[in-house]
Image 1 (cartoon, rainbow, N blue to C red):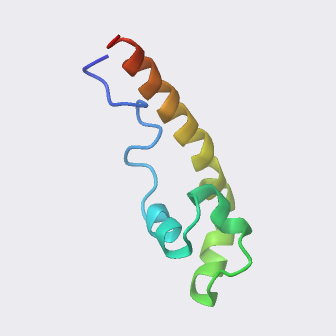
Image 2 (image 1 turned 30 degrees about the vertical axis):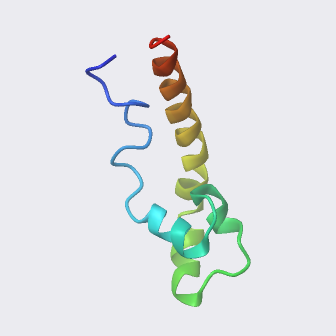
Image 3 (image 1 turned 60 degrees about the vertical axis):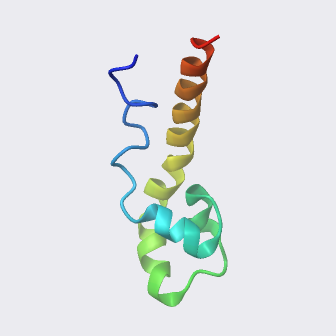
Length: 75
């Protein structure tokens, strides 16, 4: 377990600029494509990559599940 990254590679190296958009719009990555207040400069790119954004939710769920399993081993 110690030799593998937390959450395997569900989150690591997979989101490119997505966290930047989450910070810009102050929402979780997976909610960004559904927001009504997307800037014109971001709208087409974000909506064109809707599935990539939405799939991050499951990736973060998997990450947290793995993290919690690792924490359990410390008890």
